[in-house]
Amino acid sequence: MKVNVSVILPTFNRTRSLAAAMMSVLIQSYEDLELIVVDDGSSEDVEGLVRSIHDERVRYIRRPRNGGAAAARNTGLAEAKGSYIAFQDSDDIWLPGKLMRQVSLFSTLPDRVGVVTGAKIIYGRDASFQYGPAKVAYAPSPEGCLRLDEDQLDHLLSENRISLQNALFRRYCLPAGDWFDTCTRANEDWEFAIRLVQHTTVYEDIEPVVLGFISNDSISSDPRKQAMGMLRILRKNKDVLSGRKRQKSRMMVGLAMALYKLGKTRRSMAFLTAALRDHPAHLGLAAAGVLRKAKSVLVVPKRQSLPQVSSEIAG
Image (cartoon, rainbow, N blue to C red):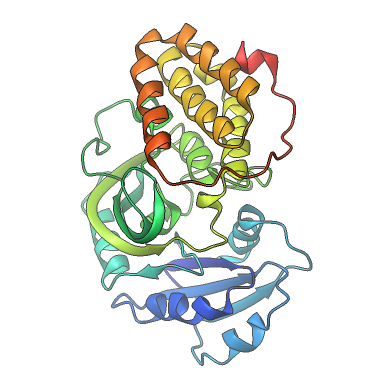
């Protein structure tokens, strides 16, 4: 079956929300698609649920063991037939018209644009990344929207503007090979975006195209995985960041705050000191982070193990 858009949906033990996530793709007004559901070694009956949705555009693939979202997405990419690639998560909802809007935008943009991305309305956290019921965020904020005529790598090293579910990709916007780093279990969208803009140009549309929900098992609410993901980004982009001290400093401030939240005070201070040495103006950013944490009602988790911090990153 020849299709124009391949939608890849990785899932692991989320049968409660999976059907809604799938249907939000299948009822899109743009119908020339396939939906590839990649079961990442679930113990729940994901296959039974997927096969109960009778639509010839749905394909089910099961991985023999759990490898994480990045590995599952790579599995789906290997099976994709479309000229365009989109991603959905098993606990998110695509808004009506998402796909039609983004396919139409591509027809108005130059060939050098390999990605169209939009925004997401998130339930379960606010704009200050405080989590809880009745909190809502619009992300990314319309301020700071990516421009076609700017240094997009410089911009994305400072903040991630690309959430995979929000975007539509030309199939060949990246060189051949796996798109996603299977060693990055958090901040993987950001790690991917940094590599992506070194090969193609992104068009950012500020209209929301996805409803996102913070689940109890969401990686975005796991400070340990967030810290690990940030470490991975710093290590992989050491050469790129060597000449961009402002962006490197900002990342290390974020990592320092995550480590502090985990009770890793000594490591936190090492990264914070290195960050301020690279860019002293980020003292205000660090102070704001401390104040924000002090105001939030948090239970600091038990100390958790992390790999030894690389001196070449912190230093």
